[in-house]
Structure formats: structure tokens, C-alpha cells
Length: 275
Image (cartoon, rainbow, N blue to C red; front, side):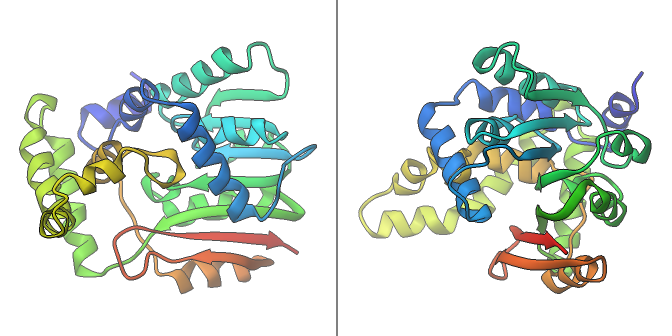
């Protein structure tokens, strides 16, 4: 049994790839366009022509696809075999035989694997490193992968103190349950997270407004898949924005873009340039 499969069986890791596989069945050109626009916006560029792009933890493969569509030479990897399969499916379907898009199974904690990848113009890892089980080591392992003058784009869950610790307990319990019983956690969490915006829609005379807006989420995601990803996402670590900023500043990076979670449980997004 692989390390990943053993961790899943022991309830120590969520199967992100299974969620992404379901998401891909709903992927559309509009979702791809939204994701592409979000990537272009954060990197402040119109295209990625001629640049090497590393997707560290490719998940569904959506942002690897976006980078390739923008002209980058893309290397995608993920620790979850189902996520690797999702990314390979996108490549085989939309870029069959493309020598400028490589997809592999690998871990951001495996320094021997990372060492043979070389340097990249853009290293991208969105919502991944806080699920590795060793977030700070994973953050450090990205440093040598960014070439001088290159960009690093990461997003990390916002530290909400005791609230984050309570959610960690929920996530641990969810993953310890047999799959058939996980709805017993998922549905109450959906109520907890969604009742306020649903009520606001009701009071405005539009009871379905929240779900109508959720059919096409920012970055091309869906509200339901975001929920499953949030509730199940374990291992789970968090950091304050200043912690990530100080960590990379000490390693020769300059912050160029920052979007915070606004005091919520979401992710803080950072784009750094390596000096």
C-alpha cells in the first residue's frame, strides 16, 4: 500500500483527488476562463509565453491547464494519485502528446524529487501546502525551485486561533468516519456555513440567490466542491499573513501581491518575487 493510501485508510488524509474527479465532470469553458482570468490577474500578466510554470499540488489540473493555455511550459505534480489522474485526463483530452506539459506523481516534501526538477519562472501552489502535514517544510522546499527574478504564488489558510482548532477537530472526525456516514458531518457544516447568506437571499425575495451565484465560483470552482474540500481537508495547518511574509522575506523574496481572507477562515494569497 502506498503512503497516501495508508494515510487515507487510517483517517489521516482526505482524498482530495476524488473530489476533484467529480468536479472535472462539471468543467466548462466558462469555468476555465474564470480560472484563467484569476491567474492572469494575480500574476499581473497577459500571458505566460516562454515561461516555465510549476504546479506543486495540481489537484484537478485546472490551473495547470490555464498556465498551458497562457503559453507556459508546465510541470504538474501531486501526492494524491487521483489528482494526478485528473491532471493527466485534462492533458490527454485537451493537449494530447504535448511535450510542454508534464504530469507526475510526487510530493512537495520529497526534496530528492524536487531537486531534479530544476528552476522555474513561476512556482504555483494554491491551497496545497497547509494539507501536507508539514507546512513550514513544504514552504521552505519551494524556495530553490524559483529562479532569481521568478515568481512564487502560494495561498495558505488564515489562522483564526481557537476557531481554526475547532475546525481541525471537525476535519479529523470527518476523515475518521466511514465514507457512508460522512454526510452526518457534511450537512451540519453546510448549514453552519451557508445559513446566513441563504437567509439574506430570502429576506431580499431571492431564496435561491446564494446557490445561483455558487454555480460559478471565483477561480472557476463550485460551491459544493469547495464545501467538501473545506470540511474534509486534512491534514490542516494555518498561518497568519505576517508569518508567511516574514518567512519568505528572510529567504530573499519580495511581496508583490497580497489578498487576505479578511478575517475569515479562507486562504490568504501571496505572490512573491525572488531577488
